[in-house]
Image (cartoon, rainbow, N blue to C red):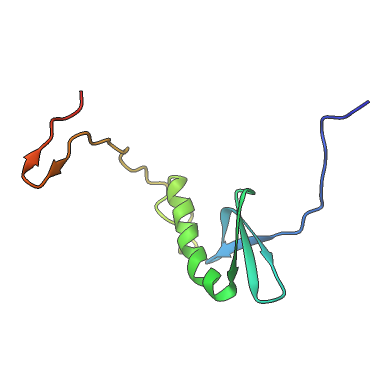
Length: 105
């Protein structure tokens, strides 16, 4: 009988914390040579020096928070605040120099 369910593991990873708050969707795999691999959503990985990661990870945390509908990654002990933004509006007319293009219909 073959099974369709598998239980691989255990896996070794570290959570990523910025200002005391976990960064969602990001795990880290430290290396011995002062490098760290960040894995986003279990699918995308990139290796950084610790110095690069210190500069990049707060930006990544903010980008993920905004994508999830928050104003930013938390900066205090206050709970995160969701602040829905206006939905994007597609623009169909473009002005190049002094010529106006007709909007698409």
